Structure formats: C-alpha cells, structure tokens
Length: 351
Ligand code: NAD
Ligand code: TDX
Image 1 (cartoon, helix red, strand yellow):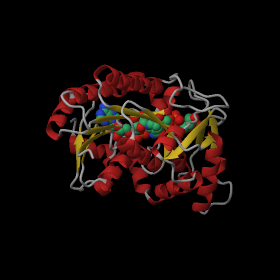
Image 2 (cartoon, helix red, strand yellow):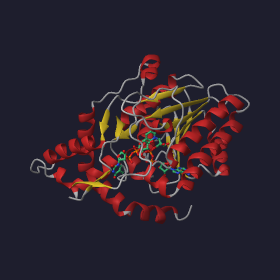
Image 3 (tube, rainbow, N blue to C red):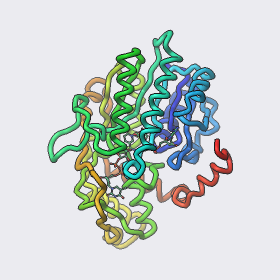
Image 4 (cartoon, rainbow, N blue to C red):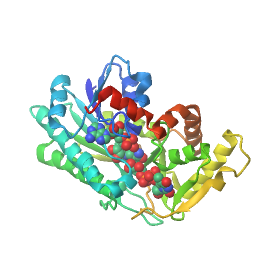
C-alpha cells in the first residue's frame, strides 16, 4: 500500500471524485491534492472531506518545478495520480497554447520531479497518468479503440493529451520511471463543470434556455459515470502492471441528439413539466471545428486482466446526475455566476 499520494487537479470534476474515494477508502494513506484552482477547480467539490485527517490541500501549479519539488521533499510521495489538465475541447480551439502549457509542460514537470525524487529506488513507486480516448482520433460508424490503436489526435486538446502520454511512456523507457496510463471515454456525473454537454444542458433546461447542439447532433460519445471511472483508476493503481496502458469505458455509445432527448424526457418528469417541454429548447448551432465523429472504447483488457466492470446503467446514472444538480442548484448557480472565483481571489489573492 502506498502511504503518501499526490493527486494533481483534485479540485476538478474527476479529480474531486478520485480524491474523495482515496481519502475515504484509504484512511491509512495521506492524500495531498495539488490544484491551481483555475476556473475548473472548485474547493466546494471537496467540502465533505476537507477536514479529513489524511487530507491536505495545496494551492499550486504543476508547471512550478520548485513548488512540486518541495512538495515531494516534504511528503516523500510513493504515488502520483496525475489528473490536472486543461480539459475542454472548445477552449483548446480558441487557446491551444494554454493546453500545451498545462498538459504538456505541466506533465513533463511533474514527471521530472518524480524521476529525480525516486531515482535511487523506484520500488513501490508509481506515476499514474489519467488520459483520454480522444488521443486515438475519430472512428467511423464501426470499430473500437483498443490499447493498440495508433494515436491520431485531431484537436489541440487531444494533441496535448497525446503528447503528455508520449512523454509518460518516454520516461518509462528512458529512465525506467514506473508509470501506468489509462485512457477513458467521456465522463458524466455530479460536479461536472457546466461548459460540458450534459451539465450545460441540465443547467439550461432548469433555466429554460436553448440547448446548443453542434451540427446535426449525430456525433457519438461513449459515456461512463464518473464514480465508475475513479473505481477503475483505483483498481488499476493497485493492480495494474507497470508500463502498461488500460482503456476505460462502459460500452455505452450515444448520439448527442439522443442523449439530449433522453435528458429532456427525464427532466420533464422530474421538474413536473408537460411532456416534450424541454425538447423544444433543442437548438442546432454551428458545428465544432474538426468535430470528431465517434469515440468508442474497448475495455476488454481491463475487465479480463483486472476484473473491473462499470456498476451503473446509463439511464440510472443520468437520473442520479440530474437529481444531484437539482439538489445542488446553489453549486450550479455559484459556478455559473462566478461567485466561487471571487471567493478564491479573496482567499488566495494571486498565489
Ligand atoms: P477539469 O477541467 O474538471 O479539472 C481539471 C483540474 O486541474 C482543475 O481542478 C484545475 O484547477 C486543475 N488544474 C488545471 N491546470 C492546473 C495546473 N497548471 N496546476 C495544477 N492544477 C491545475 O477536468 P476533468 O474533466 O476532471 O479531467 C481530469 C483529467 O481526466 C484530465 O487529465 C482529462 O484529460 C482526463 N479525462 C477527462 C474526461 C472527461 O470526460 N472529463 C475523460 C477522460 C479523461
Ligand atoms: O454545447 C455543446 N454542444 C454540443 O453539441 C457542447 C459543449 C458539446 N457538444 C457536443 C460536442 C461533443 O460531440 O457534445 C459532445 C460532448 O462534448 P463535450 O462535453 O465538450 O465533451 P468532448 O468534447 O467529447 O470531450 C470530453 O470527453 C473526453 C471531455 O471534455 C474531455 O476532457 C475528455 O477527455
């Protein structure tokens, strides 16, 4: 069992679920969450565990080598779960450099510090890199991404994630740094930032605003409940083989238009609105530049070798997700109004 674990980006969507899981499941481990608190990082996501004795939050930047080095010196980490990233494809189209800085330079910075800190003895150490299925490119109507699929990133976001994956493998081959990479499909669930399709549409349905569907809504994504993603990461972190890659997915493909229709159907019932009220908000808008047509993950290796399977069916996961947003409208309103960022400015200034 690793005793001191660094989670980067633990205040984001997936990172907060991962941090909660490790803090509560492994009380004997000390979890340090290093997060810059960009627009996507929100300490409200971790309110329920912030006082846990085995948890420490550090506001900081993965690109700041000195800061990362001093954290390694202070906590003597045995493992790293590297989650911090710029994660939104649309933002990568308007500002690619920000993605190179965080996803490439930031990752190489943490890799370098881990290598230097652990170089005398790699035994029992692990650098776990959390990546995406988007590195494999775009599928046609048939086929799945396996761990052997060649990389073919097509957006600045996926190019930056592919580059970071390559660096992680380069550190394994060149320096023998113990690494594992997992590539997961689209996540959904509580604490998902409302710039992404599902939480954006939940927010807009609540507020009777248009639901912007890019192009014709024919693009296909493979959706996994976020708690299933972090349970897979937990399994791989503890049982995965060093140097390997694992694909994570739930065999749950949906066209965007179908998912939004299902969301509208469930929300009409939950909001006690007349049937088909929310679907009237669907608005087809200009397509995303370079919009990947289809992603679909083959997670056979993970299920065969490590016995992991997703726990939730999609309709159930979507229902749980909607219920969470309806019960946490304050979180949603704070995030969309930017109140939480004002709070951070007050608390942390420019640090
Ligand atoms: P997110 O945008 O919700 O969170 C990212 C977190 O990283 C935020 O808390 C942010 O403050 C932090 N961060 C950003 N730059 C930082 C820096 N320089 N230093 C320290 N912290 C920084 O992202 P997410 O959706 O939770 O994704 C987490 C990881 O999982 C990413 O690496 C992403 O590529 C990967 N992933 C996401 C999905 C998905 O569907 N969301 C699917 C597969 C893989
Ligand atoms: O307003 C929208 N309208 C729309 O039609 C938005 C925000 C998205 N879309 C479409 C684009 C995609 O086909 O919905 C699909 C999902 O879009 P996003 O939620 O932006 O996710 P995606 O681009 O698929 O990327 C996500 O999954 C893989 C995450 O943001 C990445 O971090 C992850 O790696």
